[in-house]
Image (tube, rainbow, N blue to C red; front, side, top):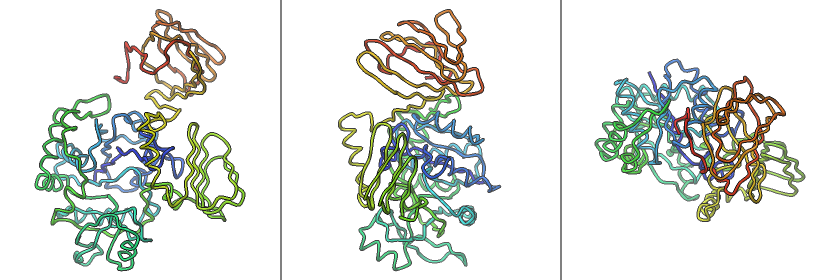
Length: 469
């Protein structure tokens, strides 16, 4: 049995302003109606040998991940929460330790959650080929057959042939090259893009980590031994995991081991790491443009234009990226999109909220979005998923008015329980203990007007919370 290990902890800053710390790219529907992490799992569904996945993610994203899994009918073997990011080697170590406790002979298929693969059948064949080598004690990675001299990827130099198959021993890994070096690599036919996808026995990769990076295994074992179950999540011990060295699987193991094997793969792969990658992967019109949302163009060529909340109109652009959200607009030449991270760094340095979250903020019960604010007031649109309930809480600095615009609400206000339907409202005075629930079968939508001296999200005292916050 092959157990997928989905690495879903990245931040995706190069896809700002869509991808942000609290809602990164793997949780977004960037290619079609499914999110990237959903597509990662969907492309495995026709493989009978695939077991339920282990998902490793940031604790801030746990409820979003859980809801996206629920909506596609996936019941993960575990959702493991990282209190801090420590790169891929510790994530793999934790997954291997977790799986070995129940499946000593398990094979792990390690997949980043944000890749695009268009030829799924070819990918399945490569996974089965890799699994055969992994079962014999090899650590297998996939080398993507390059289609261009890409400077944004690391490369793998192939070594001797393995048996009579296309698999190769790994001669060496090389860092991201400059353009001239990349052109030499591609023309030689001996180099492949480093995909960051792996297949190996849990026992084998753990033994090699013990050999080459024992401090990582030690810290991960401590973090797992002291982990706590939190609803459907396994929460790693924060202090132990924070003490873990930060390293990638490539550096910690694959560049050191003598067990490495590369399976060549040509399957329409893209790591979707930048706006340029999304332009390359997208369906283009007759002028080479990729558009999403309400976009109107005049004399625009070879550009990517994405509108989230309003009409986006462009005239006379060529080779550009334009991305509009409710609170930010990005404009960049396509050949400079790698510098978007510099914008994010500047926003972080200025403590700008746009680096961290969107106006629409997701919660385990649904989401809310700020639609207006001023001195001593703020207006939000709140959506509560059917069957969900907010915490029992009160505020010290604000009163609230709720108006239902869709669905049915059950409101607790001190000792009262109030049923509200469309176009009905309730007033919650400052200090009132209150709760909101959606007992219906459709989403509950309401408008919340807050009035008070302080309107921050931290003005909440929780008495009960089904989500354990």
